[in-house]
Amino acid sequence: MFRLGAIALGLVTTLAFGSQARSEPLNILCGVDEAWCVTMKRAFERHSGLTVSMQRKSTGEILDQIRLEKNNPSVDVWWGGTGDTHLQAASENLLEAYTSKHETDVLPWAQNFFDMSGGRAAGIYAGALGFAYNSELLKKANLAAPNCWKDLISEAYRGKIQSGNPNSSGTAFTTLATLIQLFGEDEAFTYMKALDRNIADYTKAGSAPVKAAARGETLIGISFMHDAVTQKEAGAPLVIVAPCEGTGYEIGAVSIVLGTKNRDLARRFVDFALSPEGQATGAQADQNQVPSNSKASLPPGAPDISLIKMVDYDFATFGSPEERSRLLARFDTEIHPPTQ
Image (cartoon, rainbow, N blue to C red; front, side, top):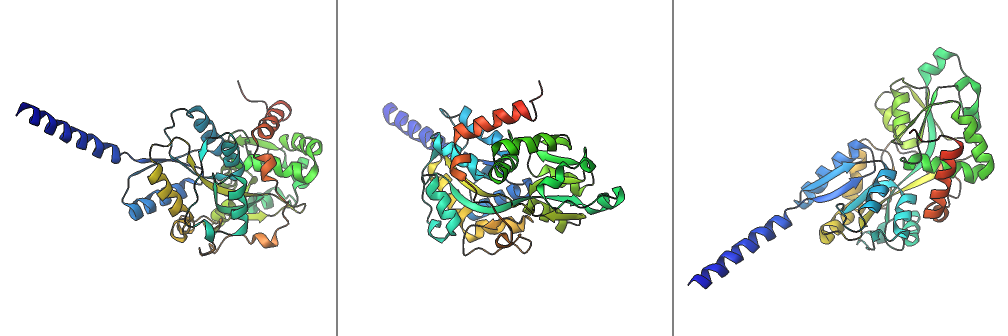
């Protein structure tokens, strides 16, 4: 009798703990705008009936955390943020391969990205880099409107520009890589030295510069154009510029962290992120990236990438750990040394 009672008690205990384990939330680090993080969290919870813990961080911070926790990850999914950092994580064996059922529906640029990652990261959106200026501040200062990258180094804009810091911001690393592909590395660093004299602040998040321009706190913000569109649609007096020399672009991605304890749930989230329903959350959160699923609707304010002069962005080179580390070290040494 005692033995049967002990077995029954053990069974109840096992079931209780098993239930508790299954109720642990799916842990996601989010690399897009906070509004989209919140919208996506709620949409997936409604869709799946699961509890999700989602935290917004800059792309560089997410990569650092996943590296730090590689032997015991607390994160299950990395959703959003520039693709070159996802590719770097893939090359460091920090991500788990997974082919979603929606992968056959994605556009060619997303298919190429998935193949480049070895199946460890899936492209979920694309967006072109550019800058935006506050037209009211420009008029008040009686300044000429900038149309090109090289216009931004004019003395007229001294202290009137914000850009992200490429150590934390995927947007800013895309800027660095874009300038190198446009001008060559040495000329790009010469350009960034001149631009540095005009930059009032290097922000942690890549969307912060255009948000500051929208609020009238700075004249010009360098960022992805879709982030500027979001601010303009909210009523900000922004003029959005695709630089005359050409520009780079990002492919935002979603990845499953290697060693996740919630593999099945993580895969369900990736499937949702690649589905038309999941990709529609961008427009619902007033975001204007171009979705990767060919069956998803394009947000009304999304910039027409086909009309923008684009570089043939080299994701393989700039997504490699060695190249990224080398360029960030050069940036810290020659352009903006980190504060002690």
